[in-house]
Image (cartoon, rainbow, N blue to C red; front, side, top):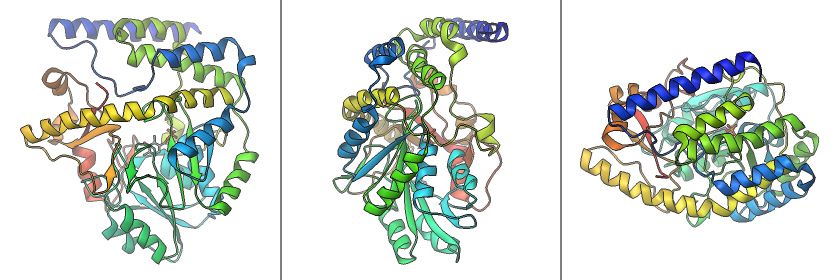
Length: 415
Ligand SMILES: *Cc1c(COP(=O)(O)O)cnc(C)c1O
């Protein structure tokens, strides 16, 4: 650690503890349910230590095993693991054979890394408005956005919900000869008509970044049920390198760091201790480069075996955690009813996983979320704070997305 890093970590710890004392004095909870690293437990920490201490226990076939187990769990033909959701998306773009100048229609309410993946491939991104029942693409606006260059529609399922216009969007795509990519990053494991999401479109991906349903700190998966797309996906996969040893070391260290910072019941002090020890290895998921739409140098990696080992461990727990999320959602449903807010819509035939429970509140309650700590004992998430989160520049012509940007807050669902 450089002197600069040490100073920075000490300053951070100092600020944290001052804040903790202020909370104690004002009788607010010191720790609140986590919105990050929700599914990390001591078994993940033990595994990360093992993998760090003894790289000889890395088994190359772990990645294949993870892909097979995921595909089976997800009810999909073939799955391929990458180092992030965005890289998995880039692999999908290549597998579909999209070319520079082609156009994609996608929701104007997303993470910046999603449009970036298309832009890196020279594809023009056309944003279309969402509905505010499930925060997915509003099918009624899609037809207006189709041009002779449109090749693909990206639909997403947010907050653990299944998007309202799932079937209709796919029908529009089919009628117009367009491919469908499903972004399942926030709803991994949600069901629609008895089947996991991500199996109705042509190709799909998810993220196992630390704030998602499955957590490998960073990671992603792409899958398809189409044999020829699977072959093309596998060609991209074979071409792409693994991350280097330093990256793997950092990522495994982040399992330990994140557990103590975000999940351990005594995280208010253990987190700081671990930050002093490991803080110089902290990985961030969206960098300044990503925000500026600059192609990161590392981009395009398949998943390394020790990261897949973490994924396999997460898969063992995912159904239990998703059950727990659904139970918490019942509590938030009651809260909405009591307080006069609209509940998110669970579409007929769907079983959501409630990564986070989204509610539209008054804009001032999103601008300053501190009320929730004292009133509800939880900290709110603010996905999304802009159309291309977290980049602040707006996107024109998406008024419903605009409304969600100013009003949608997210309650934690593992509490
Ligand atoms: C997190 C997320 C992504 C990107 O996943 P990374 O693993 O961070 O690249 C894409 N789309 C949605 C909706 C997400 O929530």
